[in-house]
Image (cartoon, rainbow, N blue to C red; front, side):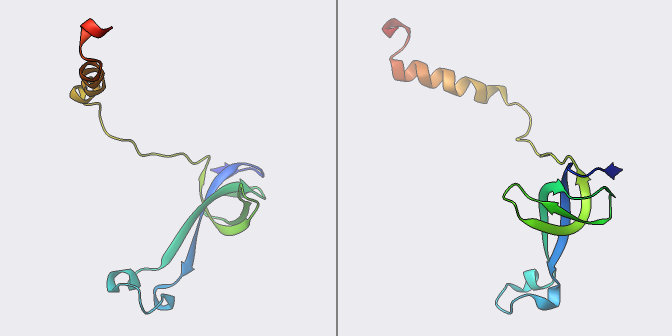
Length: 102
């Protein structure tokens, strides 16, 4: 996949290798490198996997491996639970004292 200059992208970079981590971090944390992912506008045409520079919304220039083009959030809050939909309706009814107070 190819990205063109100015596209919204996601880059990945290793900030610290595991041997460079601070001595006071927990043992399990010391076993992995410190990584960062940053979104911004790419400064040159590139392919996924290329080392690129981007400009973030705040104006910083960051270098890293191009890992996604037009990234978006891929998480959700699970499936709809019909019983939960009724909570707000029932609460309003209880707080208003029922239908006769309308």
